[in-house]
Amino acid sequence: MTARRPASPPAHSAVVTRRILRLLEAQHPGAFTELTFRNAYELLVATILSAQCTDERVNQVTPSLFARYPTPVALADATPTALEPQIQSTGFFRVKARSLVGMARALVDHHDGDVPADLDALVRLPGVGRKTANVVLGHALGVPGLPVDRHVLRVANRLGIARSADPAVVERQMGTALPKARWTLASDTLILHGRRICKPRPLCDQCHAQQQCLFDLEGGRTHDSAH
Image 1: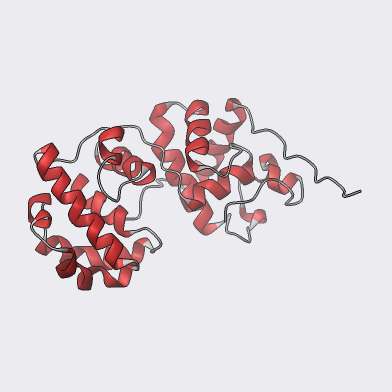
Image 2 (image 1 turned 180 degrees about the vertical axis):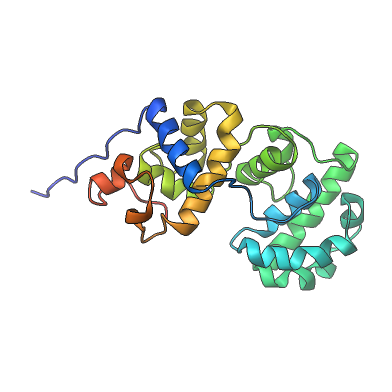
């Protein structure tokens, strides 16, 4: 008879989740997106480009891109073919070029060239999913947003503050546990923690939340499906 793997423990309570995030916020003070931007349009473009690409690389590409296409109106007049050489180094450049031009045209056609401060409206734009929409809302538009990228997914499950491999479920679980005013900071903190400490091979002895971490307490046996 095949031995059954022990079930993962349930997620921490809201009280413990908030305590863990306070510890990590102290470890990574002033956490914020590492993408460079001056307005919501620029952050929207940069976040689309950041898919499967480092923020550092995106920040190298965007200055010349924004010099040539400073507004959604300017970008809407471009063609994907013209855009591709400028963003090629970010990877998946053909798909991204189509998404950027489609997004800009949608902003011009349906939002007078403005980036809407509404999640549902943002995710209807070409190339924009919940993560991208939440990044823009929380960092450029003053609307609470909780982006869940691969780092947040991994770290939240390891710590035990969420229990799912589905980003939307993790977003909902964390959003329930935290006040809205802390959503964006919580995401930024977990992203930095995932990049610096809680890597696929975690540096557990450097984690300020080690004593509360279910992954460490169970010797690395907890749910860890998202790397």
